[in-house]
Image (tube, chains in turn brown, cyan):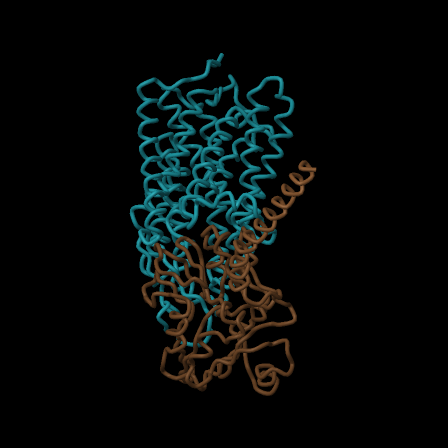
Length: 243
Length: 392
């Protein structure tokens, strides 16, 4: 009889032990799972049904550099202007050589549908997301700079020096190539790119080119816009008005 | 009867050469270490001139590595005994220069530590990725070819192996030319003439490198080159220099004909500062006219002047690549044709480039590697040409 009691005591202890272990494991893992979810934001994958693009109206582009400053701040760029500093967006001043008409516009990665940088990249570090955003995988880039040779828009920068105090959402690194990401970290949270948001005249219109009812699609359907170096046939995600 | 025992450098000369070569290689490695620590900020390269001196050295070495195999191709594929005797030396030089050039390219990467990534992830549309196959395949093909020549049992296979190398070197130099041909938006590049131009240039530069190596080895071993062989090789070198010049002329003349390209040609050939100077004085005068005079002038054409001509052709090669690679990038991209362009990022402006000591040291390190491999190879294995009694 006492034997049976001992056995049931032991199984009770075992049961208790298992319960405590499971509880402790749950307490240990749960915050990690929560953090994982928080870090990854929305769980659905990027879809090819969307193609992000921008329409830039040069007529409204003022003599300011708020888009450039907003980009630098959002992405943690130094804002330095030496030939070795990164510039993801730059203001370009244009003057028609025949007529003398002058204008200014922000120039950055044109997020081509047929990006030459992606074609030439030996490791596949340069890639195009399903939603049309052209990016560099900073973990795979070997720093050969062939993409910089291939880009028709001079959109890419090479990190020439060690970096400090980087933004957690925007990984960068010495010895790799980088360029405008269309503020992918903001788009994935449902926000607009920093430059579009900062423009005082709303000259940069951001939206989904694949949605016929989006503001950008409507505008592009009714008003003239051009691709920079349209002759190259790269089908850029950025379009300009007034050039 | 010719002396069939392998010639060996005298000990003192050999060790001096190895020490000198080793020192240059160490300097190159030190430069790479500095670049790894400080970043490319210590080079002259920037966001406009993204490829600089290391690429001039690396491309010269790789293109010449293919060109030097002329000698073995003529021997094996076209059955000329005078060249066949020299095929092993040509193979050794090819492997040596390929190793030197690739080391420079690899150490110039922003992340040379990720070379394993380049080996394991291939983007099938990238010429660079193809070239990783082409370069490693070239090593294997030439090594196989050397084996079939130097191992008596394998001698019957040396002709097919020679043919493999012959085909591979064409594809390899095409691959190198195509790196530039495939650049759609750069005015200096993006033309189909570049691969054949690189192939013919590789012939001329490779012959010159072979000649310098052969003359040095013969000189240090107090051996005289058969005048008949010398005459044949110098005439071939002259023809190849003229052929390369023809391609360069066709490239520039075509550009001059297109209105959209005349600005670029003006820059490279006339008012681009250092680039026209290096092109006309370095490449055209010193690298082509003077060597041709030394080769073909009836009063000249002896061994000393051929050696001098070869050295000048090599100098010309470096000058050409400097203008082609760096000058080609210095000219601004035509992003907005018809507009005058200015920006904080150098749009519309000529790119500034000042080669720095570390990048030159890195490039020289590649030459040092090629030199070291050749010197040790010639010493330990039987690479020196054995003259047949009657060369034909």
